[in-house]
Length: 200
Image (cartoon, rainbow, N blue to C red):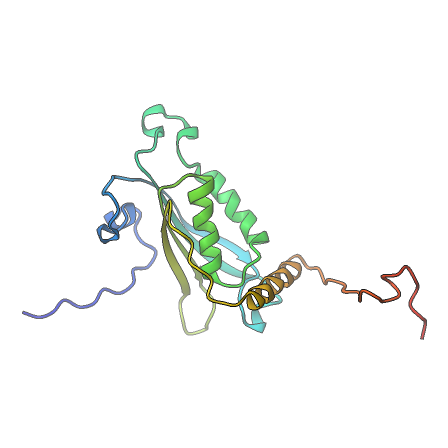
C-alpha cells in the first residue's frame, strides 16, 4: 500500500469548501459549528518590507480573510448588526494599508486577525496576506495565520532595543508612504533654539 502524497499548500481556497468554513478538527477546540464571513481577493497598495527596494514605493498585497461566528444572529434576525459587516471590514483594511506601521507580512496579518477578534468579536479567524509580485520567477509569497478568541499573544523574541529600532523603521515607512520626508533637528541646533542658522 503506497503512502499518500503530501498535500501542497492550497491556493486561494474555494469559500464553499469545508476546510474554509470550519477550523481544523485537530485544533482541539469544542466542535461548535461556525458561520464564516469571508473576504477573498482584497487588493491593496502599501509600503511594507525589510529590503531597501521596498522602502520607497508601494507594492500590491492580496488578502483573504475568514471570520467565524458561532451561529451569527443575523441568520434569524436578518439584521446586519447581528453579524460581521464585511463592508466595514473592507474599509478597515483600506485604512490599514495607509497606517499599519509594520515591516513584515506576519505582523500585518496579526493586526488584521486581532481586529476581527476584538473589534468584530469573531470566534476564529484565518488571514492570508500575499505579495504577488515579490520575485520575477515566483507567482506569490506570503503568510497565512489562524487565531481564536482568547489566544495569548506570542512572546517577543527580540530585545527591547531591537523592537524600538523596528518601530522607528516602521514610522519611517509611514512617512515615505505618505510622501513625506521628516526633518530632524538637533536638540541644540540654532533652529531648535529659535535662532536662524548661519548663512554660508
